[in-house]
Image 1 (tube, rainbow, N blue to C red):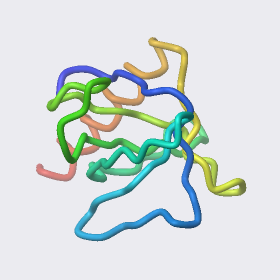
Image 2: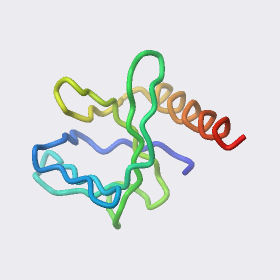
Image 3: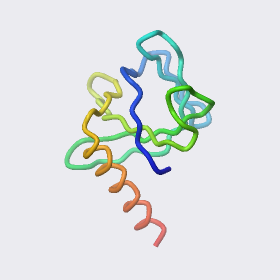
Length: 102
């Protein structure tokens, strides 16, 4: 869990499954990509979803955390282009986890 790479154009679909913590997203080429839900956090008024790959994937390393903005109104996971924001959200999530453990 040391990086925050962003696959492109992943959206929640009505067929989205959350089974055993697995989320299936459909990319722009209609490929199904499976992720494990790591967590959801709220940072600076926005909600973010942190995901880990659930199976081997050419675009995302096995230990990479993928972060999306959670758009509840449109039921989408919107990609984040700003590397600094990705790092801030990831650091904030880690600090929340440390607080919960203590």
